[in-house]
Image (cartoon, rainbow, N blue to C red; front, side, top):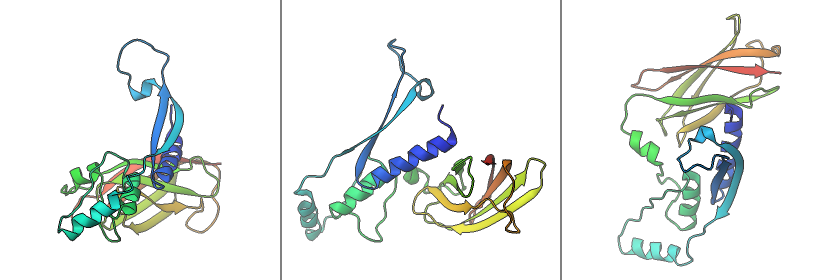
Length: 214
């Protein structure tokens, strides 16, 4: 079973490779050799492998000729968004200030209601610092993030508030050093945190999760 911290770790590695223009493939297996479609949770994760699939040498020149002829060039691909952005920059399609978006972003760009998902903190457990991650459907917009951290007895130990604006759907801009509102290091143990996200014109969304300090 891949826990949320492990998922965040592998996602981080995957995005690091993708941002260098590499295509990342995940490998998993199952000993069941019967002819059937397997669910992801029925398989054992092995790891990641990266490969490079560079564009042809003549592509940048062809794009430039299209632009000189008044043709607007766009790129649609099934690659990871970070891989696609890297390649698009290399061939001259994506320039500073240009818009790029994933299919998920495109499908929700007209949705008025704020949606947040995949809330976690990484690393978890942690000792000196952790980041709060979540996905949302409001890229390019200001979001007010409030995080309240409680002891298991319900005592509020830390409040964090930050306005973020991300170009994509994932946020990891809010971090915490494990200290309370007075700057004191809090004790080891399990804590509950409540993350509340506000967006203009939408109802705020709240998710509650647990973290561990050791």
